[in-house]
Length: 110
Image (cartoon, rainbow, N blue to C red; front, side, top):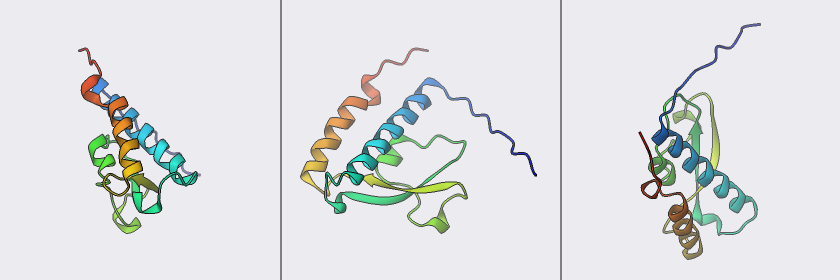
């Protein structure tokens, strides 16, 4: 049996906030999708990749991720990403969400 080698990635505070934003947006996208709170047209299915580099929140929120499994990394999972400009109710929810987790409003000390 081959042993897996752990990958160690150190995050700075800004990257940590990006991970938090992406995780929160992703979790709420999945919950709203499963609870059928918005029309299906408000979501775009994308492949989220497990990798060492931190995916910028803007890339996640804009669904700038692989559209097909063949374009994604080996360790990835398909998720519904709630998108802007697809539903007025979804837009209002995303506006609220972005105002809550906007990086510019968070104080980052060095």
